[in-house]
Every structure is written in structure tokens, then in C-alpha cells.
Length: 462
Image 1 (tube, rainbow, N blue to C red):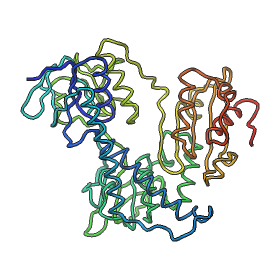
Image 2: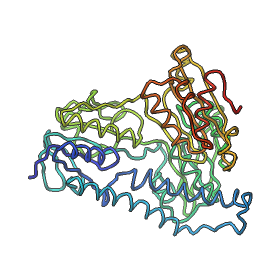
Image 3: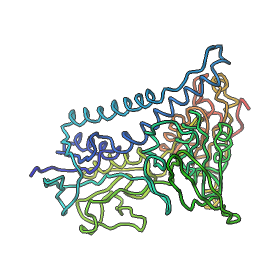
Image 4: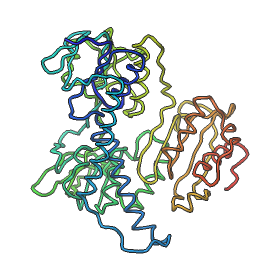
């Protein structure tokens, strides 16, 4: 029986970051992982492989639509699907091997297998039981489905199956207009598939700024994606070579059927806690199946902590990473902190979509007086030169104090641009602080400054 200061269950972004931080703080650390590779869903079947396919398909789009306009003449490239899959696998391998190297560098033991907690202070992996002064659950999440929808990962697939299809489908139906569905839907649309998104609500990307939602959907429609909104999926049928999706329109209860070669179920994710033994331990759970924790990420059982997708909050890799570092600090006797009001969200389509903080809808509901500064990328020289003029930067500030309350970007490199605003919000900056900061020209980031100027006396280039 090996003994550790801390054992982390799960090696996704939350788990591996937590393990490394614990080791940096001088603790003896082990991390449990049942996959053959480290990195969890994110590196193996999520964030990383999907970004590889998003990048590859965007390069194809550029070649087909913009190369000739720049004087780059020649036949558009054809798609070698097997080679594209190989590129995706290479990308995964480089990243997962990188985590393995970091574990060795920081002297973290990888306990290979699926873990359970027979009692507080003990973790069982296979036939071996290990002792731990502290246990941190970072087991992540798994795709959620709908009643009547049976996933086989061949015809009816989750994001996992969508990343390893045998061939590019001619017709794809995406159930759910959230981040995962729109990212992967845009990949296959660029690769030539006819993509139809079926969404229960009347707007895509629930919870996002309403103006961004409308602009984003309009942009995706231009790229060829079709949308059926206000539709409740009743069931799917898997036939020999295709599938059928049955749905009802909420407005009139009318019934409809869609044919597809592949159906992608992208209706969200749920905490993965199966097999951990939490019921026997008496760990308190929420009605939604999440592990309940206090302000220090400790569960109802002393010495057992939980972070990432298994607890409340947005299921984001970087949120899990922040919690992983904070929980490590707590276990080491220090003070861990996560500012949940400054957690950015990004959708990696083209254009990208990013947000942080409050939306106008949030503030109206709260009765909070605010002002808005907005700037279109059509007024940004770099964006126009790069065929990236669609979209805008929107900054929301307190009406009286000018303190930045939130920001919403749809446009080129939105996922990178949002972090300037995150840093500003961490320091309690005003929109004027951003507006008075010199930004290099020509860069996309000038659009952020212009939006900040628009919160005051007005933008310059609009």
C-alpha cells in the first residue's frame, strides 16, 4: 500500500493541473487515470482534437473562398480524410505525451486504472488500495443524451464519435445549438456536409448575449448551416445506412422527420461520478448529480475535495484548471482563490465568439444601470485586410463608475482578445482605462480599444 499526501482522481485539465501544482507545493502526489493516455476528455476526445479539425477545415475554407482574391491562384485542395484524421491524432499525441513528461518532471505517480474511494483516506485502483491524506475528485463529465435517442457512436454519435467518423457525411443533423454542436457542425459544413441544427429553444448558445446570438446565427447561416429552432426531438432511428430524427415544433405541435447520414447529439454534458462509491461514503450530491462543495472545494466528507465538471459551474477546462490550482493551495495549507465572475467562454468557430462577465439581459433583470460601447470589425484595418470584418466588440460598463462589468466579442481571434478585458476586470478597471491604453496598429485588439472609447465620448473609426 502506497501512501500519499494527495491522490487526484482524473487527469483532465483540472486533475493534471492540480497534480502539478500540488507537487510544486512540496506534496507527494499520485493521479489516477483509466485511459491509456493522460489529459482526460479535453486532450483526448474534446477540446484539442476538435480544434485541430476546426483549424484544418478553416484552412480549406480560406483556400476555397479567399485565396484567389489575394492572388493565390490554383486548384482548391481536396480533402484526404484519413490524413486529416492522422493530423488530429498526432495533435492529441503531442499534447498527451506532454502531460506525461510533466508528471515525470514533477515526480507525480500515475496510478493506471479506474479509481474508487472505499473510505475516506483510501483510493482503490484495480486490486490495490492506496492511502491519501487528501483526495481530490476531478473525474470530469460525459455527454448527456435525450429520451428516445440511442447513441451508437457510428450513426448517432456524441462529440466523441463525431471526432472519429469513418468518412465525411453528406447529411448531418446536430441536436443542440450549444458550443459543441456549433463547433463540430461548422467543421463538417466546411468539409461539404449539409448540416441542420435542431434546437429546442428559440435562440442558439443559451445564456449568451442576445445581440451576439443573433449575429452568430446569421453568420453561421451564411456559411451553410441550417437551423430549426423551437423544436423538441422525440426520437432517433438508426437504419442500415442512415438515421431519422423525429421532432415536434413547440409552436404548433406539428411533427416532422429529418434524414441524416450522421446525427450528432450535442445536448450538453453531465458529471461523471459512476463507480467512485460516493453514495456509500455519504458525499452530498445536488439534484443535478453534481458533487456539492464548500468555498474551499471540500465535500461533505472531510479530506475529500472535488473540482471541475463534477461540481457546479460552467463545464470549461480553464475553470477546472483554476479550481485545480486553488484546491492544491488549500490542501497545502495555503489560500486558494477562483474569481468566478471573470471566467471567459469561447466558441472556436470562424468567426470566434468570446464572452466574460455580465450580459445586458443579466443587468436589465437585476435593475443595474449600465452603458454599452460597441465597435464593428468592419472599422478595423487588420480585419478588413484579412477578410475578417464580420462581428463586433461589445463592452458593458457601470453607468456611474465606468467599471467594466462584461464583454462580448464575435470576430477574428475573439478567444484571445477577451483576455485583455479579463485582466482589466480582475484589476477593477474602467472602460476609460482600456480606452486610454495604447494599442498597436494594425491589430485586431484595436477594436477592443474602440469599443472602450465608445463607452465614453465615442469611437474614432466609426
